[in-house]
Image (cartoon, rainbow over all chains, first blue to last red; front, side):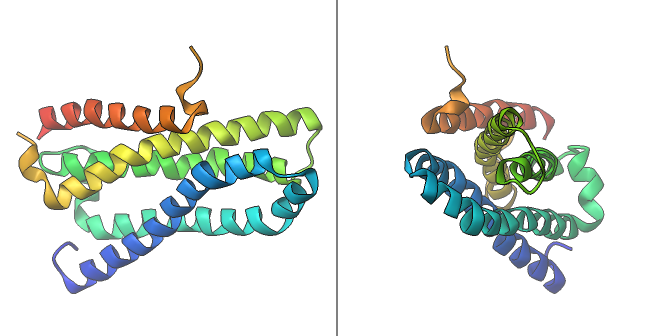
Length: 163
Length: 30
């Protein structure tokens, strides 16, 4: 798919969706978490009703779309990438990191955020635990995004760096 | 020592350290 017109369309979609996803991830970690710590109980409740659910919706569907466009872009080389074969090891490492991050979003962050936001019934203790889990998963994704973006960029512009 | 992920800078430094480690891994495969 790479190098073809349809490949360009997939790459464009991958970038648009990826910016939506990782932009919101950085917003959560660098802006929203400190904001929610500082704001009043009323402000927090308003944010939980009108701001956080909207941001989380764009975040998790952005993550899914990023992965799907990325998989489509790799096309027949998807297997080579995930098996870390030859030069495909570079984009493959990025793909593995992106996949772990996607699973973190849908498997840990979103189910726990649903408890925090009250979309799923939970006791005060369960909510506290869910908030901690979601926070750590989100911070893990922020850390993983740094090597993930390095390998994404390196596969297009830095192959000479490797051996 | 606390969890580095509790701080923004700890998270960012963790990301750079991971980048160096994974670079060495991929470099050995290419």
